[in-house]
Length: 493
Image (cartoon, rainbow, N blue to C red; front, side, top):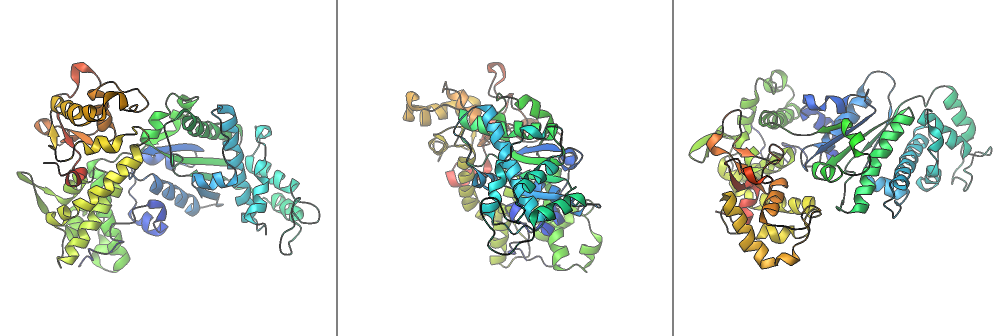
């Protein structure tokens, strides 16, 4: 079968939340670490991961499972923070109790609006927003859905209109409608509140830490004090780490899944995307009917890529090359594969070769640097100038060479007194900045001398967070390399 290498749908949408749900489910790869998050018996669970690791896709998967499970279907709200801010702006305070109450208010407000839509109310969004002021303090021990339903009934007059404004078209008697639905058990369904990217536009300030941490406290208390509502949320790993000292976060830790992908799992993701495309394109062919991503992963990948690619002094399979160059994040791997596929199609080739991948690295690196700045600028305000200080330099450093490069090309030029705080801590020295670059993934440890099947060549901060921290063992004998995605755009050698 010939693969259409320039088909934009071959490797999936960059944003899991924008992908057609049926398509995403067709190539979604599960792992044991997702079990708690995907289990509806747990009414509260949080997923954290770096950008591009599949947080949004995991939420889509959970919502799909809820909607397709046998039995009475729950009501599912899949929102982003801007949906809640549209209901009510957060208070300008770092008072944890006030912020926690704010989150409870807007969560209940969003549920109110969805309940009204679900039972067919003819209210406008603005009218439904009027009921978002429901107090939650008196809901302890009650079913939250029933309590909100009672609140809705109280907002409807006997004439069938909202207290503060009539509806623009004829309406039934909403009070009687609500009472009948409640009496018949029509709303005795669980409501699931799914919030993606709670950390959107996050800045590492005391006010932002209080706002985000109070959301998690509000969720924990809502599910503890009431029934009828379940909650799922996603947050970036770096933001979660910045909240560890915030109020009550130690009590939320037990409800958390961290999204990481092994090399073999990333291979499965790549092969599954290709298999899903074949099944959509030619569902009656032998591959679509009989192949699977467990037994035929290598063959599936070789339908789209050259089987072995020159890699240094040796050769490597395509998935290894993509994983290293794309930093091991599924979204980035898909982006790089898609860009390389366009190059291969332009050359009228049946498979993507190494040179098609390397041709894409310039534009790919520009996008990755933009992602790096968006993801970590809040942790270090001068990140762009710091990164640019590595331009036209070596790609590999010993620890001594790395701190010297930082000292001569960044600290000396910027002036020590002008360097901002590093991840919330006042600037001290070059090792502190080197650790930050390791933490945000700009550099990785190179473990080539000890690499094996069990020990990877490239070591990330997630694998060794103790490095560049303790003077007695700064590097564990490793060197440091600029992450391959950034090398072309920075012209490192």
